[in-house]
Length: 269
Image (tube, one colour):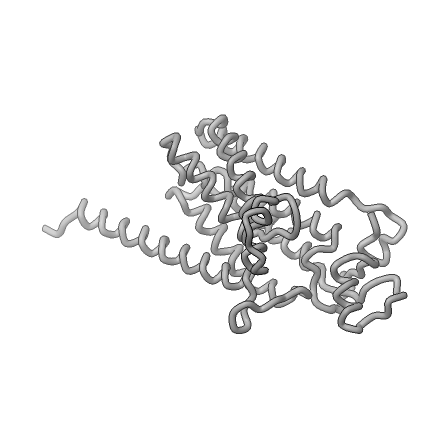
């Protein structure tokens, strides 16, 4: 594997494919552990996780295909090829897991609350794989931790096509390691969510969704492969707005129902 920064030039990096596979397996294992600690059936968490992985892989592929506009049944079916979208993976994985819980008549919110720290952990590991592979590179940066990518990576190709570097240059210009920023976000969410035990089901999922959508919206501004699709917003930014709006509406609805139930239980004399 080529080096991803000037000071790693003589050190072979880990295989990004193994990191991505490891992210899925570690996330699944932690979700099963969380189910056991939350007095939920670990077997159901395992199979729901398997369904979520399958749905997530296809969803992450499908959103990119739809965004690129080259939609046909054969392209949509080849989910193992091409770029992937995290938001597409979240949508596909969530729908697949919810379908499993519905068919099994299980409390989906309780299982989702138990599983969400595992999602954050898997995301953190997966973004390290993106860093090693050179995907989702950042904008130009002069910071001490900025990285340069070798020939053949997305950052190098982008910089060469824009005329910023010469074809014979060994590396790209230094860029923000946005993948590691995202990995740090996932790690912080994992630490917080794995330690927090909210009294009301669904709060862990809500906090994770709100926190991720806000930070992801901001991080998009540091992406070197930023592509606006509507006005000045990229597809991940639009997804962040939709997700945050949905979480806000559901949170307000739950709060209203809680207040209404308290009033009903303690009517004024």
